[in-house]
Image (cartoon, rainbow, N blue to C red):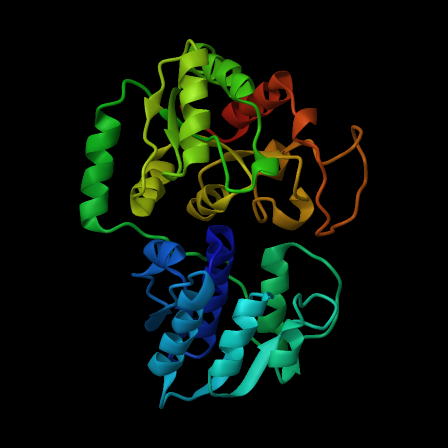
Length: 334
């Protein structure tokens, strides 16, 4: 599993279950730099091979470098959780007795050509459940469900200092993702953050990465809102983790921090209009806090699919505030 932060979070219960079932097994994770920052000290992972994906000829050199790192290494089992061509090429480069991947129907970019065993076809399910199908194929129990995204003592100290400087509990907010179709309106966030502060007594804290898209939306929100907002955008992924860990609530579209928040147990109001929340919502918790713009009409009983919809415009300020109020009633400790 190479790239997406949310998918990297979904890998952790798989790795934990494998270690519980086979305590002496050695797990190596082929991963890209950003998610590596998230999980590099995870107790279930023995070794990381960091794949630096680049465009053009530099990309070819990245594959050659990975092949060099893998020279002389052989694995009993390779689990191919990512279904794109670059992951298929890496699967081909790694020496393993068993290369276990998705069934042909769910493997994209002909990724099934690179595996020699495939889990049975079961159709679309939540991404986490699809990963658990690999465990079930191997006879490994995925329960109890654990992520173990723990903080170091240094991170705990930085977290304490950060939150001691706030005058009230924090509501973390993610404003933008790399997929523009997932993003909600800056004006909508501006109004929501005012109510988060004035009605619910929380301090809005903008979190996320350093991308130009996130910076632009953050600047728009900051100029449009009357709320007193803490701007914590930056490139320190572990800081984002400890902010989420210490926050009372998160408001976010479908992106990596939403799934990190779920793993940490921090309640999350999820804004869904582009991706299907039944497939990519917070797993097994906080489904009642989803603002469902994916549904084309209230109460639509749509199936679990990987189909995208243009539904973020169906999300309203009132709809988000209703879920914030519900979160405060059910989950947030005063």
